Image (cartoon, rainbow, N blue to C red; front, side, top):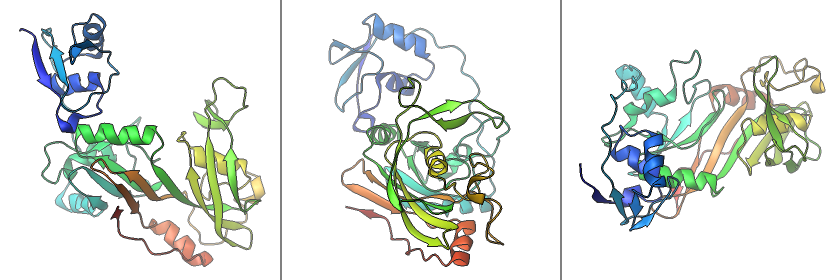
Length: 331
């Protein structure tokens, strides 16, 4: 095979060079791509480039002679779904255009697989092609028991643009939570670094000292939207950083653990789990209510998601009145 030159398409703009290679030559390993770049055999517009280089539409990529690819592993097995299950999945779609999909992820549905998890959203995404050549791609995550707005890219190029928006914090997220107790003050900012630790309940996120070199910066803005006799409160949480379980740990640090959060609450904290109103669900009460992000084709997209059934029941019981969901807006 001789060297060739390929042009980066508009849909591939902002994708990393190594991912561009894996898209066009799926048999190549990351090690081979790194070696080709390190030895200068790969060129972008005639210049050397490393694997992390982000490409622009119209750039010329020199593809050197490539080694024969190893035998391809079996393709990921898609989850078998009945027609009824596929229709139910399609009902989760809040917004759809040629670039992306936005879903209202249900409580209890894992986004990706893991030990003992065979049914998860990532295995179902082939059912949401809606005629597109590519299956949708995840660009961010929600915990299994967190419901709400989840964005999917409909092409590799869009995935790269959306991932860059999440990395740059150009995406604004708003969560609703029902917490035990009422924060004091009723609104403010939590600036508390976090780190991953082991323990009896498995790997967890925990508060860290500011001089801890392994800690990650974590900031959450919050405000109280309503409360019930100071025993339970409805909070809006706006994470300015995106650490694992950030909102759950920050709420515990305020002394107001999220209702149903058995992983992080302290058993005696505010008598949180001994004074719960009779009849309330013990499912996690954390919902990704709204998300505002730069649309890949221009402008800003704002999408809101209706509460899951167990949180709607809790709101009804406590007398919390949630405003109606506004239709998706692109402006």
